[in-house]
Length: 223
Image (cartoon, rainbow, N blue to C red):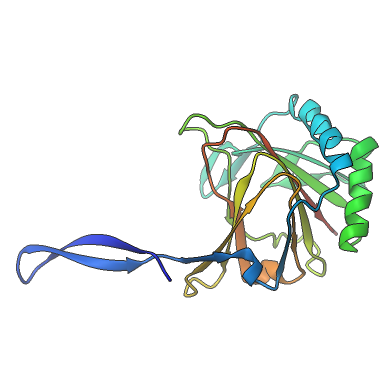
């Protein structure tokens, strides 16, 4: 059932205040969507800790890229890294994402993702969401779809979550559809967004006051 929120509005006929009901988006489990596959704790334990330690060491030397979004310029609300088998680098909002070598546990993870998802990935993007005990500092990813012309839409996008759990939100691109889908992603959880999902849905990580660091790796095929 949809949540409702009271909205106060002046009613001209009696000069008083009338309470109107505004329907909010219905929140449903992500597993209701056939375009998304959620696998709890699907990432191998033997890779998880070594990969977190590797990411910690690399992100310690990375600054948040400066990007322009919605007419405003400022630091991205998360840190980013990239790696893969593609020759050229990867850019986001005209900011070049720092690249790290595809070797060791990262290479093992990359090859595991290709085998597990049965998709020939050539790029992995890594995000770090930092500890946010201040209400003014909340790392997030706004609602969006990965329809960048560089991303091959014939293949899905595969995601691995590590560390602090965070909510993952999905909603239809059609604004008339008031449904929202939410899945809390914990350490070692997997999500596969199938081919075609980006054309139908938006997804994002809402801002939260978090107690620990979260890492997310998304594997893609780029042209």
